[in-house]
Length: 113
Length: 112
Image (cartoon, rainbow over all chains, first blue to last red; front, side, top):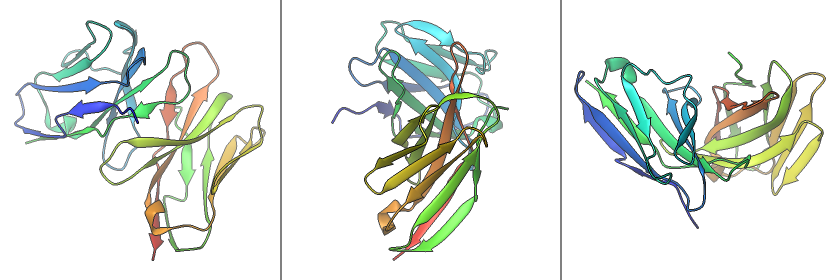
């Protein structure tokens, strides 16, 4: 069964450092989402792509976060510089265009020291 | 915030019992979905119910939707230890480009 791939699974970094997360969606899924999930909370959408275009990045802290999906397939989420409050699980999900069901990857757990 | 709110926050039951989880939301929706998350993992879609539907079933899952009360419930029958997880309701509100909005989740523990 096709799955969303994410790497790394865990990342420990010091504040002010740069970190990057990678996501490979299910083949054929044109829509890709990045979520942040703080411990004890539900996922919150950071950015949504349709192919290589950003559809919604209204909740993305653009002073330090950036996301790209250059060829409309895999995607990278970057944080520079990382802050203590960025410690969270970063989840990637994908769906078909107009699809209601989102398929999530295993997530990257980030700890900022 | 447009989050749905789940109730209770935590639920502990014995294997074989039924588990009922509730979700309330604030404004008109296109659909409501339930997802499961095992500890430290990604979310798995369980079931979707549209605004014009009142009840849906999938295996041991039964979800109801009452749009007049802006609430939904998820029933897991004959629970198993493997059902231990966090459960989230997610709503897609009406309106163009509406995103999926998740609640804070319910922690379900099923004791063997």
